[in-house]
Image 1 (cartoon, one colour):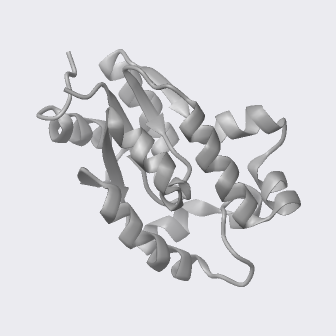
Image 2 (cartoon, rainbow, N blue to C red):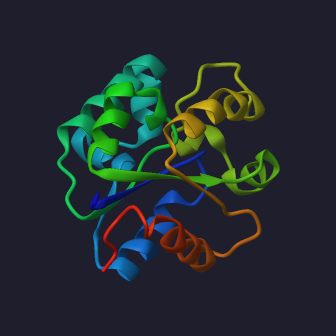
Image 3 (cartoon, rainbow, N blue to C red):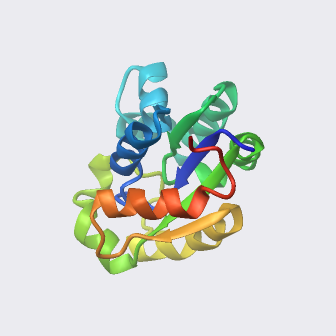
Length: 171
């Protein structure tokens, strides 16, 4: 059985919030890959993207994820982690990938200022275009899909636990 649960999805899908609650519920460690990047670089994701560019940021994200060793952890990835084939292969080795599904409308309500949030996207690309671009990647890597539309974070945690119990030893 695999020991990690990997959360993927669009920015504002709740990966970090749900990840903390899930880790507490399952007595697992919690890792946020965005925080790992910020810690490594000593600045906000938005500053890294602005300074290095989107393509360089995606390589940084891929490399930092691949350098980590995850054991019995809940891993909340950045929304762009699915662009990194090596990163996703690394995460899937000992992890069940859970895609937190939300509609574009719900993402738009939650996201706030996309540019200060540190979202890896090319200049001139709309949130709708980014959603359309990433959706096939989330579906490609997901072992489990959990529709979080209209649910509280706690309800999402319950659904995730129900969905992954056949894949992972949750204690």
